[in-house]
Image 1 (spheres, rainbow, N blue to C red):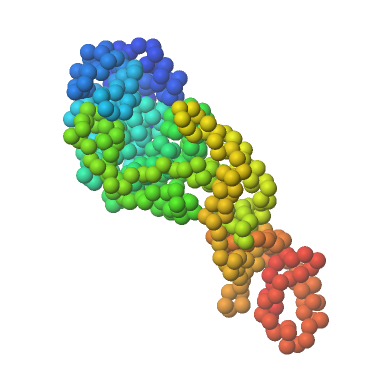
Image 2: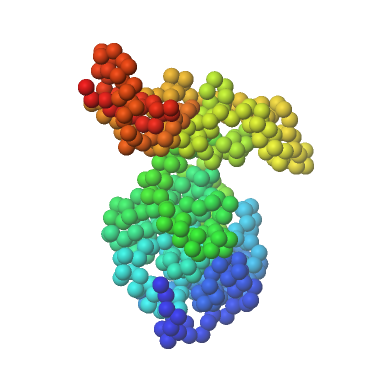
Length: 465
């Protein structure tokens, strides 16, 4: 995707940086040294304050990535970019800030410098090259290092302002282009991030773009963490199976429905921001910037956390007070004793801050029973919907159609079967079925479809009168 021809280099002389900042990018975030060297500037305390222009002085130096003008490959202005002080900046009364942008900088995309000065212009001209959007310049560097055209945003909502796409972002939203949203994997627990992805994706679709959301194991927060741990090929595999925006949205809603009581409402507009969230997006905000949040996201209690940790990987249902787990073909009973032991094992690792100390105060039988009972209620199903019409075979569900024909449909956790039949084989020899029918009275032979039973159930066979 990019050339190593230094004759076209945007910056023949690399920026001045110190080793620890290069190490953070290369070893910490899997950015190639060539790309990192072009983008990092190591700033003194004075230089950092000049770039950021904060109300309260930043106390350390740090690295700065200013990006380039994508049309020409020339460096952007000193104030356009993203930086990280060596120690988080913490204005009085606010939470620490790891990453900073210049005061007054409008939300927009940041394009990293590449060895080929014409890289971004070439990508823009070739509409067949997918565009990737991520949170932060280091993550964009990791994506570019594995040859994905990755553009940095300085926050999940910083693709635009007031519900409109920012200037540079809009220039890259060409009809019939493919876009991947590679935001951090913790969006499942962050309603604002989820809303940002949906809003951004919908705006891209309105411009005629094809939109996907890349999903990976949540133990790796950012795409750079995933690439560092698993390699670029593994991340490309995740990209290859990325979900369309609609499918991603539906899967999240299905997950929310399953654990309805622990999930906040999701909308396509930003949630009201607390002062803490204002500070996250604009580091120099003061008490006057505080916007009351009328719908705060509640903290999960230990029961909800246990259910999320133990029961979110696969679908579950409860029938008559017993838990059943979906096994890709049917729901299988899980013994109460084993489930309570799993819950106890988790509670033995869970601690709460009580009277100045962290204590495992939930590791008891009462808490185990509370989690188990909650789960039973949360996934209870109507007994009348269990084992619905159709025959659940190992290869799918055989449905009998009104015209007497049959069809095979995939297994679906929304259809609660507690059994699985034998192998479905539409090409089985019907001789034995015909012999069985000969044993029946003529009136009984007039049925149009019967299970074909030859020692074991192998197919559904249509008997013609």
